[in-house]
Image (cartoon, rainbow, N blue to C red; front, side):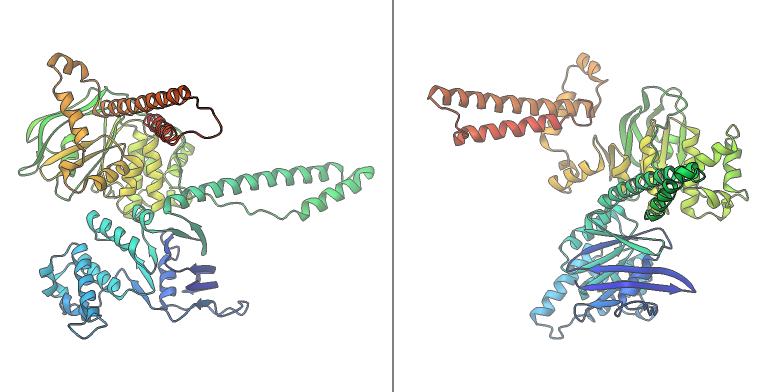
Length: 610
């Protein structure tokens, strides 16, 4: 145990922020602190950093905070650079923290090597070291403060939204760095993918209380849902039992020959330790399908040599999008992702080539401008005016699905936060049931609960989705295929985001190498098919062809391994072999290979209706 809070309470402005919490930081743990905005996450970080003190509590035994030894604690605030430091150069700021003053010492060399590694890892050029901090943007200043903190290597590193202002490449680099960081880390972040990669413990703050879950963020969400479901069932069973016991009391208490029976049942009911009614999960999970009002044609979008851009073309691509596909679009800023969505929506003209929507295609389009709605109406009134055929009860029910229940539905639309406005517009789009959704950064400014609700809704949606997002967890939850915009080219990847990342790790960063040679051979083979046959194969999408090919290879591998087992078995029998609980090493190895190939062939059908 490195650091411990025991029965700690913190108040601010007369209100309790943290209530009788217990927290342990052990060794090199990486702890994620999660909770709704205003739950007290930053307060907890400031308490660990020593910037706040626990409330006095005469009932608490002991000091409240215990440490194993004298600890160094470093905290990354959201306002990370002091005004007086902004006239210093980066080099002056970062080298000032070097513990070794001897320019030629081994410690100095190690410090400067780590300094260079961190500086370039966060996307800076080496020449930037000579610049004053005032020459950098606010986001870049936070990166530099972050580098200074990492160079200090405190025993407990406290990070408040460390991925803000970082592009995906820098965040991925930081994830790898955190994996090898040899000290304890406590991090507050809305980046769930980052938390999944970094955290091995999740602490949830809710109603001033802190609860610890071992494992990643995804494991925490799964476990919390299971815990809530189990507590809800236990509560409902107890309520049924109490109703039964008190029902017997009411039934028999006035009958003289049953009075003692009624008293016994009352005592039995009174002795039962009451289970508190469990709180509702603050995420709504859609259990039914969200089906478009109009099915639309099989091919939703066809583009041929489509050049997209504003003043000049950014890239050219050809593709066909089939009904029901959910395609996530990724790429660097300025690569043309937003321009592509706007071109499909008809908001930008086609610069060259062809872009055709299928028959009866209805579009729901979302970007940050559509989310900037202003109205003096209440949320419930605004929504009802858009869908007048709904009853008031139905309006309340739909809004509750999107976390606008109770007081939230009574807010003025103009008073909503950016994330709440985005959620309201997306609720309107999904309620109108188009068959093609075009979404540009739909989760910007949303908290985690809102993101998970939207993910659930989009998974339940049975139409077609093309969406742009920098939220990697959101991409992993919603996208079934990926479209990568890289420079002036585009690449279609027929699997989900996690599969794409794994392929990138295996194949390196070069775009041409992201599809292995055998995959390229498959695509080349399809193109080499004679013209008449190629026409017949047009209805087979790249994904289906790819899967069929992969499954065929695995089937052949399984059959070959099975043949080898059969030959070795027959040879062993011919030599008089008998079963005695073991088999020759060569046959055992062949058997193991055959078993493994059977499993791989079976798994190749998983999720594909096989």
